[in-house]
Length: 272
Image 1: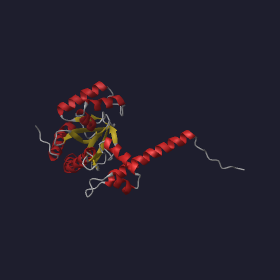
Image 2 (image 1 turned 90 degrees about the vertical axis):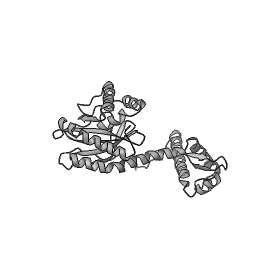
Image 3 (image 1 turned 45 degrees about the vertical axis):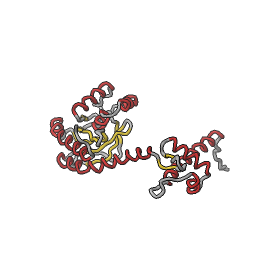
Image 4 (image 1 turned 90 degrees about the horizontal axis):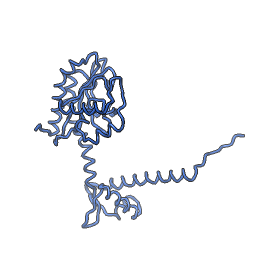
């Protein structure tokens, strides 16, 4: 007769599970603390926080102290109440910057797609990869395909090289340390070659991907700058090699540069 048996976790596994659940519970509680503040109630005391979140006063104080140490909360020294910290403003500014770039870029991306009839992208750098925030595909049957939110290695894409060329040395160092893995037969995985290419991008103001990230596809990218002059995104235009020859790609370069400059101007950038 078959017996119904169930594996019983040992003491170590149970302790680890309880520890993980405890950490997740603390994260959830911390998020709830932050969401308690509002425009109508910008400062809240520990007693009110504890009552509002149905937590012990000691637990609420521990959460507030941790968030205070990380800059996510501040404490009013006059009344002891807590308010949202400046670190949240900095994080929100990063999100706002992305939203602003996407909104301001749209008309220029549409115009670039119409004038080239090739696929256009808007991308940002995220650690060692690029993420596509927006794309408009070509109307032609054979075209470069892409999807919003897709990641690609920064070192071998034209968008990534534009962004890396204007990043801090430690960002480029992280890319090299992670490893330059070939995506096609034409991908150059030499760190020395990458550094040389990034210098060339800084001088010329654009970057070309000649089948280095995707076989049979060529593309060109240019930087988008914000009001401070910092490069916050890259726009690109690309298509199949049989249609987008090296000569035609060079012909489209001014269009890509003008579109990038137009978006930068809309973001408040003024050329020195």
